[in-house]
Image (cartoon, rainbow over all chains, first blue to last red; front, side):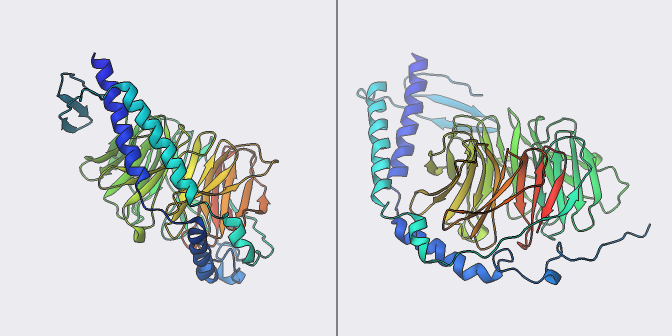
Length: 70
Length: 373
């Protein structure tokens, strides 16, 4: 009896969760994709791995080595 | 664990330190069969609603975008010092310090420019699967097989025993798989092999919110960029990626298209999408506003699982660390592979872009970390 109650409670929670998920507002993929592309393009200049900056501005590509004086 | 006293209209749940009281009235027609049928109908409806928006593929829309130039990245630093598999790493906001954790039970803080070790802590357990740097740079959090997440303030005095100031924050009933500070040092979000995620107050150790919904181990999580509000995404062994409202504990959206465990999830920099890496050897992109998967990053030649993913600053590149020891770099919009990077001598287990986007760091079962730029 109590096992059945637990199952009913679980599946009722699943049903409520699914109702929430079904009812959210959605956007067409074409619009969502356009927004993703627009973001990439707008931020490309600030992305040092897409538009490479000179080696002197990338601390890991710098040729000089650091020495710790003990 | 929960205590379940079942009467006709009264169920008491006992969860961690929280008590929630439900009054449950069973309606005569609410049998298990009816509810199951309703659940199936809703699942089909959800698929139908999502399919209605699928008017085009992302890579088709991206055909007009310029291709990326030649992509060259190399190992610029190798961090050696762990005695066993590196399982996790995180960058400090200062763009040069890194914290890493290992199966050897150690958590090490490195200066990535010089490769010097600045701090080391020995945890009471092996398999420290999760570590994170605090936003202030003054503390690190870590945990694993001890089922806890502990915070260690970092001392300026290199001789001080960090373990003495350790603060236990999170308590799960199974291993800690991932942890992340929210936008301050005051709260930590955790995910666990016990199937839940949880939000904790660091100072008091109090559980602020718990997130139930995964039906197996939760392996990873990522917080939405702060501009987009209080949500996070988690991925698990139930092949699901769930998006959660941090305040209410509610699961807002759920995606189940992977064919195996989801090892890593990461938000697209705008917060409108997230990527996942899975044992099914694919990475995928899910758009939150279209509420569906919009890209799959895969190749027939890639047959080993992806353990960790991260985006470049603009979101154009997706870096994936794989169990075949390589890193594959994907053009997020076009869906094509831009580059494959070799160097590690065992599985890549963790990968994160540096805060200024000039480099990324990988950790591997070969005991080392590498900085690529």
